[in-house]
Image (cartoon, rainbow, N blue to C red; front, top):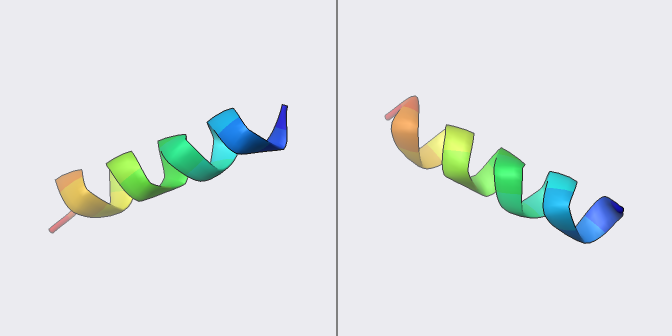
Length: 17
């Protein structure tokens, strides 16, 4: 369940731009 968290983190990082 770490793969999804890493993907989520990348998604939030791109949205928090």
